[in-house]
Length: 235
Image (tube, rainbow, N blue to C red):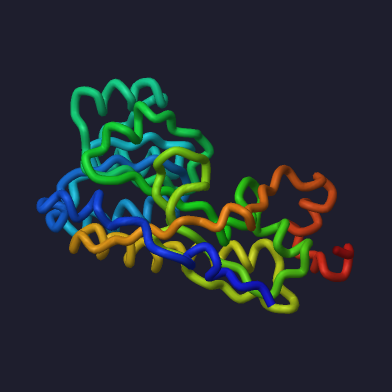
């Protein structure tokens, strides 16, 4: 049985970055980067805490249309976001289902911290189509992760990780739905940590890191169509 807690073992990173800022207990401003209903829901939760979303970089029309309705300025590109942050730094950046790699001059301009959500149990299954890869590997346990963005891609300190069980008849659809629910609950936990200034980032055990790339198109289509990959492929 896989142990997804290994990413958070060992000594914690200093909570320092948040503890050094007394104002960390009062969330004020953020930027959201991402796509889909997951980004929308997380942004809604942030606004419910009183947080001001200064801008959004939207990866699809779902998030973009919501941002327009919410009167949130939409950036057209990473370059535009970088220029915006240079003039108006924010406290937090939240990246959810974000296909873009943010350069250091973007997340380096936040006053407190930047966080990313990949739908995988980092340090394992970093990369794309992680849930499909987990099913093809016949995993029985999985997890979602919220981690800091400091220097690497999906390689920085883990702040929240939630376990997700995979059912014997599970498909990519059912696993993705479970991950969605776990991601939202994990974001609630992340917001609470941001509010009280007590977030702790734990280093990933990068020796256990695996990076998933594109899955064979035919097999991926089978997973999408609800075919149980355990019956159609071997490890």
